[in-house]
Length: 51
Image (cartoon, rainbow, N blue to C red):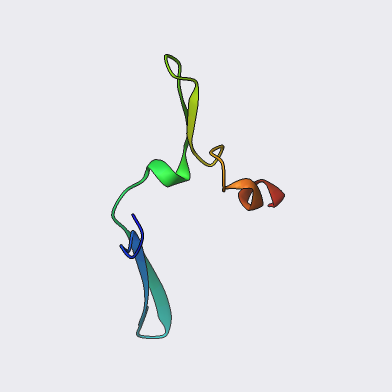
């Protein structure tokens, strides 16, 4: 959704903490009935494959 945050990074003491509301973006999934990809293999996530 445009304009909605799915995570935040905050400074805490001498470090940082990252909090995410949903973990699907850190996985790779395929809807076998529709053939649609989600997560790290979805369209728009190509830059993640560079790591």
